[in-house]
Length: 252
Image (cartoon, rainbow, N blue to C red):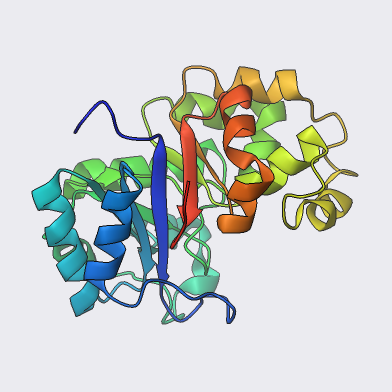
């Protein structure tokens, strides 16, 4: 991969859980052309466990161009399912079948597998270890779609930070955290988020976040174009994130 790529990934939500207002790139070629135009490092595609034609086509285009292709969907490893995720056993949104993993591996070895309905990952060190062990067993690279709650919780406990030392992470709602800490009222949704979270994480500070992010490969969500326009990207750099993940289409 070229060293001149921007520290930016595109995000495509190609699943039924996409917000109604979300208007993603309609097909693989348009999505790929947008990634090239913006000189992005790659794309994170949030989909269901069953791979459709446009996802398959985009993976081929990205592979030929040397772009990262990360495929994300809700998936619960057998060990975690047996021990702590009983409530999702019959939920069709979640994959419990290793054949879905093997199909995904035909497109990419980077799989962002989460235990939340939207594809985000929730938990602590023990839950993360389940995914890391599953990745070693089945031969994929686990990319952690780290939820904001899990990150904030670990600012206090710091056991998850140790487990994720070698794992690439994306905090899809990181722009809310950035807006809260920088008091940037232009960043979407942060005021609502702050009202819900500040009571519990009232000791959250920029130095504490920067210490957690140090020497870790963690990328912040930027929301969509509105988040970019509000200045999420320079703030993410200042706080120590590796880069940003932006809903497509976008213009840097």
